[in-house]
Image (cartoon, rainbow over all chains, first blue to last red):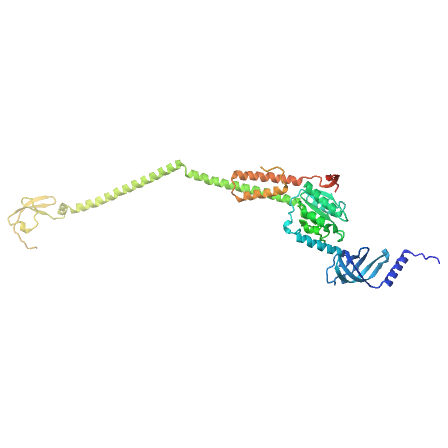
Length: 402
Length: 75
């Protein structure tokens, strides 16, 4: 019998038929690897053991109902049927059910080492060194051909082209990775010609990132005198190097965003400094001038010449007041004197004579007659009126009052 | 007068200090003028440092015996 010649499509279809017909829904145990979730929620991963690996897909409706968190490194048992894609001769398990089967070996190793280092205090926050805010040179340990280094160079250049990047080309995956990264840390620490180090690698499976969980690397990161920023994998990937680094950036670009200060902002800051300085210095100067002004008027006030002038002025005023008061006194006195004079005048007996009174003296003219008893009939008397005297004789004496 | 070649970090720190001192108001005029001049020179110097453009990306290349040299690379 002549051998049948299949077309590619025919043999693909045949394989598909055989697989789907002869392999019923099955249970498979293995470790999750390459775990990813698509934008719409379908879950893709591989199941593997020491020797083999098979791809799995879990559609969104199944994935949404899993009561625990799936991650690379977990050991699981899945139930599903085999899907084949003839177009690429590929097959995968269409997962209908999944159960945890204890932690995967890598995951376990990770937890054990994490606990050990944590107990040693390697992750203590007080061990974290601050990242210099104004670096001039940044050391980068990463693969020279990876996307991570391109991201960092690009972001850093955009933010501040004056900052220099020094790359230590390292292997970031595989058996030698930890050693080359450690070498990079040692070289930068030996030369000390960068302000800090970024250790970076793009995303990958837990196996891809495994070097960053190796104890010797984790210890080298912790021992570095230069501050270290870790930027390993994606935001969800945590390695032990991240725990000991002085700062963990979620991605390589984020590391550059965080580590490289924007030149614009620094320049604005400088402008602010200058503006503020000018403001303050002019304030100080005008304050001093004000002070000087005050002092000057103080000096003017205490000028001796001014003091003398003031005193003279004072004296004149006093003098004036004195004179005024003396003059007043004199005037007062004069007025009083006038009063006295008219009073005295009024009291002058001779004045009374003008009004028709007369004074009678005894004949000798030496004694004023005040009583009828002082004269007798026939006595000569002298009578004084206001303009002269005349003599008279007493004709009778009558001591009865009229 | 400011020391030469202060790092950006120290320059910014010093600028902060100077402004603080000036703002405190208890420095004499001569000293504040000195501080002002220092601030101007420092900020000028910072600006120069910010503008300095060197070959931006270097790569360390092993020379053997544990020595490395820096080489420029194309971005």
